[in-house]
Image (cartoon, rainbow, N blue to C red; front, top):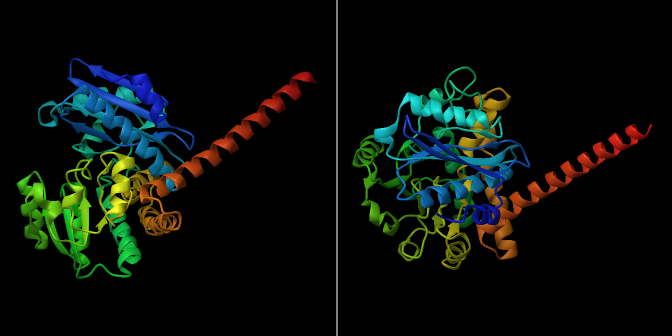
Length: 368
């Protein structure tokens, strides 16, 4: 297996927890990246990984992305993520999710979980039977499925990209190719249809594309060829690493704006490649922050209007990132990283100063 301590140290993680329950078949990893700004909040995904190393690498990258996502979004939260590995069609059960909930609870609030790929509200409500450290549920003060807010944030991000690159205030008449039309992708297509956008869609599940075609008049493309479709905007809303050596030369769109996490297969190399190709890339953890913003409101008393208002700020945030990218001649993902790292660094400095003052006050009091 990958050298865990070396990898976690390189990526800046605070804690990685391996979870197993033989009765239910649960195998999970919880990764807590950084809690400078607050407790780590991030979704739990269920995926049939090819290897344990693949699961570990995924959860480490995803949790780090959540730290940056929360920081850029202005939330007082850190970054964490969980992955359950195995076939969700065979393994999902009340007992499994309750076992996972007990592991989450054992962390004492350092990690707060929510929905992600192959996890729905019902699954999270089983988790909530064992721990209060869960969001995205429909009971009590929960907000339910965060997918519509993730899609809403992507819509605002697309509008910012079109404003910056095409000098347009409207998406009407543009063509958007959407890769992956599950919960988030479907909600995004619904929003785009209301904006009078021409839709091209693909998905590994043919039933998903047929539904979008029936509901919104979308054109269906083969999943392997969606990047080569002639479109103004390419919107990856499935799994990560979609922008890589093989796919980037195929890409016809000049804007990438989608909900998938870790879209750049290798951040530095492919981020630079995107810039050199003249493609405007909306950093994934910035544009897809709507779901996180929404569930974060559960922690302070849920108000859907406040959640929508905060999700709309993605538009202005991305415009600032695009401007910084142009001004400094750096890829957009580096510009967004700088925004996140600056906020974390400043808060860490304030925390250190406060602790120093407390220590000095304790020393002064003990000498009296």
